[in-house]
Length: 298
Image 1 (cartoon, rainbow, N blue to C red):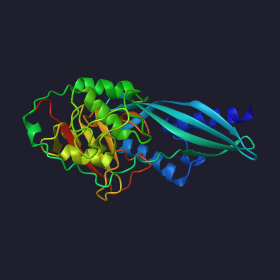
Image 2: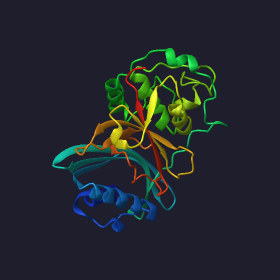
Image 3: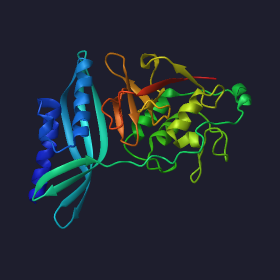
Image 4: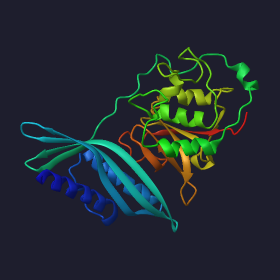
């Protein structure tokens, strides 16, 4: 029972870090993770924003009793009420984590890594979609955002299940907005999914990024120069290392009080997260972004 008290104390201390200014070095995190937490605080400070309330909870706790250590696998649910420009918004985050207790003392707490989706040989769609430019469609961005808010912290069994789920989730949101699939059963053509098969553009971040750039594609996206040109229902792509290989995708689901996009995402599930991702474990100073506005009709 003593480890449970120590675990609850740890969660309370994490909440105190966000609101009361507890020193991050008092938390049993790695140097990289301490830096990540500090990046989020710094990003908020730069925006003249602050976390005024936090609720930190552990879910899905699984205990492994080993010879010397007690290993706790759990899901950390963080909720932050953020004040900015005299208004408020709520950000939520889920992270699968692993804590290691030694003699009822929490010796370490780390993020569980998620394996990336297997990349295709080529990330770009080479099929001719010229005829699609004449095919009309309407995009209901309200339905896309509703889907993103409904499913941000769970998985829809009607779609493929993959470990690195970020792009699969964004594709689902776009499909919920009324965009039809095209290209099956060829995996490097179009944008589509079936329960046991799907295009690379449906599940692979790099492939979707290039498909969004494709003129006349079934999705119908237009690249914008900055995040402030986006509206809810649009898509942001991330190249964390700045090496030309795109790693992540999010959907804009709201705007903060200053008009900056807030995004929903899977893999490390998030709702109304700051679009910049400066507190991501994958973030680097070389990060590149692509901003795509999804046309309401084509």
